[in-house]
Length: 189
Image (tube, rainbow, N blue to C red; front, side, top):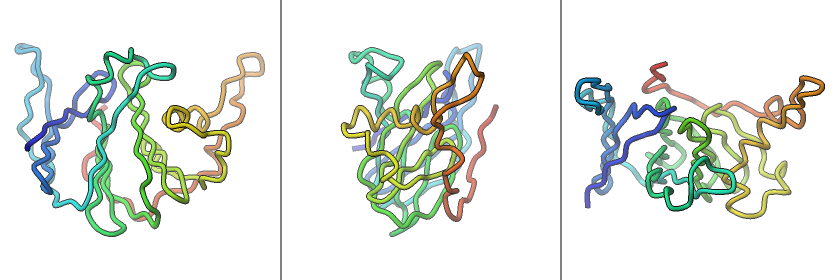
């Protein structure tokens, strides 16, 4: 069965992804103001895949939508496995990367302004797809449930202290860059 997903990015839909068995096609779109819709006509890449994880946002308490709206956000970002240790992230941009880890779960929480916050939870590390960085999983002992893992970006970025004008508890500085990144398509804006 063929399925199509439109990738979310701050109310834009920059890419349409077609999944036909083990073949995944990515097409770039452009918004047509006259028709008030996206037109997808520029092929970006076609992959033969080993595995696929479709981004989903479950809803409250962390997502910026209701539980009943969750179905509207299926496919807001996507993760592909194209070889034993090679993966493709499809979101606001598209990139390939290497990972010596096993995917346990892929989350893609929708935050304010229809922005996905995709997290790949591996058996050894936690990968923050927007930042192209990862942190050892052992640094997240307080995250137990899938709901808590879905919101791991709040731990990664830390909490803003409005009194002292600093971010507290951020993990950004300890994060390592993902390996062998190859940019396939850059973010448009």
